[in-house]
Length: 334
Image 1 (cartoon, rainbow, N blue to C red):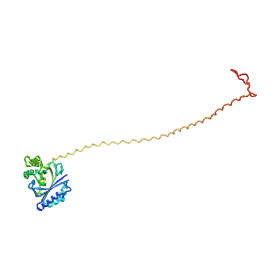
Image 2: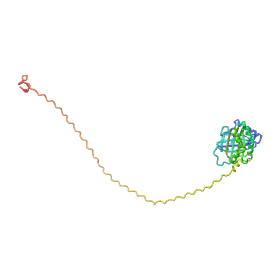
Image 3: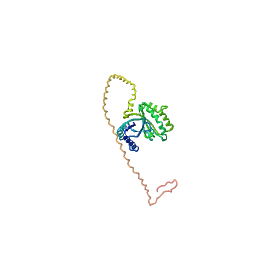
Image 4: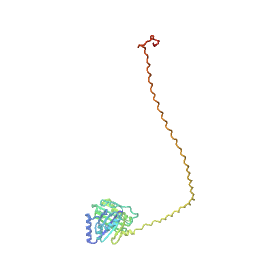
């Protein structure tokens, strides 16, 4: 869960204040780097209640956005930038926050990833950041004395500070309240200076860029002015009303176990059937012998033509006919 830290440092001695001015210059030149932070800024602060254009050279701060609370606590304790600032400062204080809502942009980015808050979040923190249009700055700061006076005498506010990236033009306010109701009454109360200032912001378009965010407080590290105001507010929040005791359901009665049915004697196995003797094998009739092929009929020689009858010739070489041949006559041999 994303965790935001706002760390505040106090430098009382002149040499230390010069040192931190050098740190701010180095940061503007890009010489500082927090590799595990997705977004981070260094700020100066204002005097009085913190919401003034007059700088407070003693108080400076660092805001950073981390992937989770464990990383946030480790980096605040061990990273080189925080170690240098912590060793040089006379006092340091860090508030750990979980964003629950955010609207707007910061340098064209949306640095906070809100999560659904726990029911009845107490205490609650609010952060506003705005880039004021140059020609509207005078009207903006004209509203400041009444707002600072009002928040200074408000008994509900737990902790407050005004910081800025660029004097007069880029301003951040941070405050902690016991609950959302008290914060809303201050911010939007009818007839109050802050509520009237919000109306003027909308009507006259004072801001070039703006962002508003609310946070659930996860904890605090260190002391501020010898106290831990945020930690005290966390410890003083009313305990949640205990939930009414829910009577444990009575165990269901054990099911009645039916008496087992009397054992039934298993039927005896039927005797194995006596195998009949195998029938005597009947010899298959032998196949009848193949019929003998009939002998071929004897070849009958074709009858030879009878020899022509030999005609006896008459003596003397010439035939001798008796009588004359004619119709109905008969040839007679001589």
